[in-house]
Every structure is written in structure tokens, then in C-alpha cells.
Image 1 (cartoon, rainbow, N blue to C red):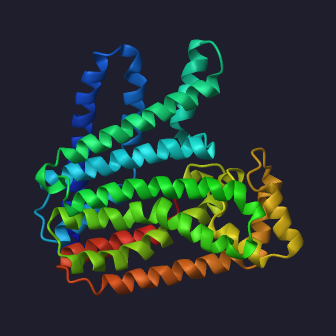
Image 2 (image 1 turned 180 degrees about the vertical axis):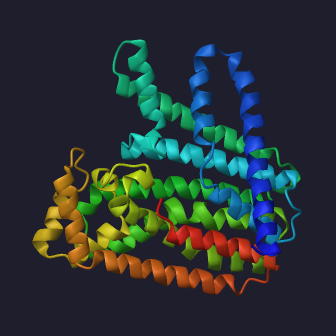
Length: 365
């Protein structure tokens, strides 16, 4: 291992540990505040704490190297606080996303609404356990959103109203909500809309629900906090937006073809959730009329059997939809890496972004 790689890994590890420490301290202080309300609200904080423990930290790392690339100091308190805010926002998005998608698993364990449903069952409480679980999880996600804003505000002047960083943070949160709505709209409207537009609609969902807040906005946010000029922020976007789109398309492929032991989700879970991804859009456009109608009919069926999952997979492969998606992932990846090499960065942040990009598009989970 070269000294350069060792330096990169050491700095990145220090940042990840620093963000973890900030999250722990922040949530501990919130726990003290919530305890004055009632001990009964402890599960809300516990759910948030569990969700922000571990994970890939992709968004926080993109933010950090955007900061470092723009001349920010190593592991400065402001960038650690920004990383904390991004992780809390990500947790809120995951909590709400799992409710919307009716997904009972997250990272190999029960999702937050499922945890609350189980809490209801264990205690033998009255009324419907699933309704309680969803309601409690919505409130937990809302609380997490509030914490994200509070954490970001603690950065101070760099994140104040009117700054570039504040504008990026605000836009990021608004676009995710809009993208999430486009996603649920497509699930119900997609079957009766023009099939020819299904891929383009899926691309728009990917861009606003995932790509921008996974890579583009975090990278730009770090740069803006460090005072990056507009030209560098444009370069950041040229690299990170296609990267984020490729990252999400890879996730969508794994949602259909991934190994449950690796992904932490049941096989074909995205099909049961009715997600109309780019992969599904290609299948509906490229398959025979009968096969496309079959996919339309089965997509979103909660009790989809293993045999039915295999049938949809077969259609996706045979019609060329999987190859078309893989080609698009490769095209977007090439765009991202080409733009990355044009960024006027020092070798350390450039190398770090390269490693993050490679991991994002070639992952198995």
C-alpha cells in the first residue's frame, strides 16, 4: 500500500469517526431533552440512533471531499457538523421511504415502522399494530428532519440564510420530496400512461429522488461551505450528477437481481413494492406486448411468489432490458469519470472522489 493511499484512508477514517462522534453527541443531547417530555418517547430516539449507526456514509463523504477539494481544512468542525446533518436527513428519507414502499426490512433488520409495530405486539397494546407502527415511524422521520435542520444550523455563518450552502441544503430537501412524489405517482399512473415515456419518467424520478441528494448536492454543499467558486461547483455537478444516476440505477438492478444475503432485502423486493425504475421501463418498452402486460399486471403485487419474481426477471433479461440498463450505467459512469478528470483538484481529494465513484457504480449491496 502506497503512502498516498494510506494517507487517504487515514483521513477518511478520521472523518467517519468524527461524524459518528458528532451524531452520538447530538442525539445524546436530544435524548436528555426528550426525557423531560416522557420516558415513553425513548423509542423515537433509539430508532434514529440505530439507523444512523454505520452505513456507507456516501453523502457525508461526498460533502467532505467537496470541502477538501475547495481548500477546506481537514476534519474542521463545520464539515463534521455538515456530515452529521446529511446523515440525519438520509435517515429521515429512509424512514419515510420504507413506509411509502411498505418495506419491512432495512439493512438486514426490521425497518423503523416494523420495529414500532413489533413494539405494539410485544406489549399487547390495543388497536391496530401496523397503523401504530406507521404513525410512529412518520413522527420519527419528521423528528429526524427537524434534527437535520438543527444540526445544519449549528454550522453558523457558513450555513446562514442567503449563503450558497444554505441554498443547496434547502434545494436538496425540497427536490427529494418532489422526487418521492413523482415515484409514488408513477406507481399508480404508470400503467395507464404512454409506455414510450416510461424510461424518461423513471430517469426524472432517479434524478430528483436520489441522484441529486446522494451525490450532487452533498459534493456541492461541501464545496460551498469551503467557499468554492461557481466554476468549481459546476465541475462538481458535471461529475456527481451522472454518478448519482448510475449509483441509483445500480441499486435498482440489485433490487431485482441482487443477493438477499448481500443486499439485506428479500429477493425481488422492488418488484413487490411496484417500483417503476429505468430497468422496468426498458422491460415494458422492449418486451413483447404480452410480456409487457404480464410485468404490468404483477408489478406491485405484495404476495409476489418466487416463481413470479423469476418470471419477471426472465422477461427483463430476455427482452434486453437488463443489458440496456447496464449500458446506461456504463455510459453515465464514463461521463462521471471523464468530468472528474477535468476537476482542478489536488491529488488527495481527486483520488478520494475516484474511489468513491468506483465503489458507487460497482457495488453489490
